[in-house]
Length: 213
Length: 240
Image (cartoon, each protein chain N blue to C red):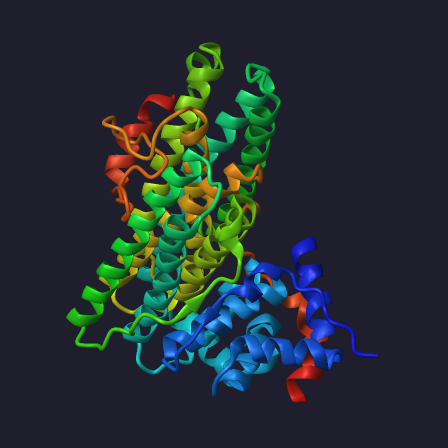
């Protein structure tokens, strides 16, 4: 009897990222992993994925760029489509939107400087989350937590010191966004002592048979 | 950890349940779907059993890490450990003082105290793994801050967390070991979360004219601080 599995973070399933670029593929993988297993699994997923890249820093940056495009579009739409949002929420949304847009610009410039081709903005959809502040903030928290985990997963594979410094500077701001949104939702700003939890050994036994399937 | 238990359960269901497998693949979409599933499994399963070749390379790399690289990383780990000792001691004293009456804020302070203590333990273990001696526990000077009451305590915490986040960011590019870098990054973003939350709770805006104040004090790009800059700022809190 086929029964639908409960997802760890169901609201992530509403996020659609279109496009066949490597960045779009990785972003979909990161979001699907977060939806299925929770934010702490995103870091290891991304870390493994980028470790297999051959394009080096440009591939990692294009993945980050895709995530930033998704976030920037998410907050821009919240500003244009959001309903019944408090003044305090809108002030935070505008600040975050400005930050994410600045991240898009900076990463694009870095890719150009490295001689790479920046990924184009993916087409994205967020379902009906903008109809209430509650559903919007819930997805915002998840996107920010996922972003932190993704950057932390990818950063150790970055080869250039300058690119690593830039990624560190961005992930710190994503973590601040995550904390401020969590605070608004009455959630603890830092859910774990280490962001993300990397110890996945307990799941090994469960996974092995499936790996061969 | 409960997170890991949840993941184990979810992965077990994914393995048994064709519906959820299809759902994952549908979300991932496109030509890379099967590859993404493999990566997910490899990532969650750990590298030791999945890819023996990669593990061998990593082990060889670990052995090949030069003495100077280890010495470099040990100095950074001990620097971070000293900062975490200060933070842990500060929050533990603040909590024990009973000065923070607001229940939610007191709970957060207690939680942060526990987190900083976890960071201390992790960094101590890392220093030992590097074959070094963990930094000594500093004697702190927080009595005046704590006696001054909850507002001063939280204002100090807000500044100290911004300092901590900038301190970790300043070292990220200097760490030689990929594993230690990953650990440092996983602490860095937690300090950033603390910093944003505490600055918000004490009523600071995103930015402030005062240095090290604000929930997103540098805007879109966080600024790093060097060891010298950070140590100058924490000096007033260290007796020896």
